[in-house]
Length: 193
Image (cartoon, rainbow, N blue to C red; front, side, top):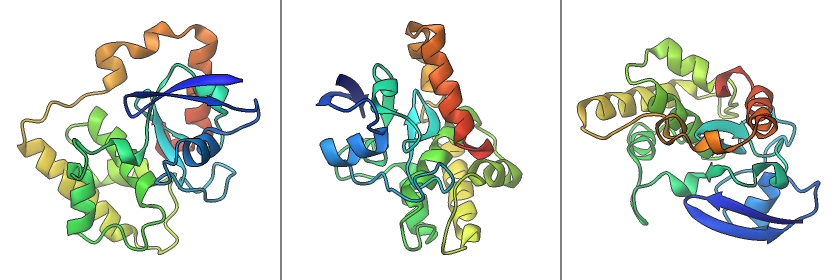
């Protein structure tokens, strides 16, 4: 089946089997290898991407289900090629990236949190990343990184907000498609809703 996926603001076309996951299409067809394959059961969060601004497990979403949605991978969060987002920079400065395997999923989860919540608490951050597993068991530095990024964003004049809510991009989808997004978010665990 032919799918047209809006990945990081670019329409990408691929011919996929109906059973092909979004994770496999992103990595194998579009060479966006920042999205990591972890457990491939929706538990670890290494494959987290944003689907219309909401974090979902790309291993649990079929590519055909993502057709027409805005997909953001770790490659798409920076403002320009060669630059890092505020959150990526905060992870580097606080050594929150550690081995790096869970980092893309953590950053995208944090990105979604900080887009919708401008005044986050430590508890908010812990809740948000609770659906992402760090095998280095170094959550302290990850939480510190998100707090650091939240503080920087709070002091900056960067316009934030849920992109989908601002643009109404999900409004163009019918009820069954919205169900896909909600089901994918539910399957991603409570920290990724």
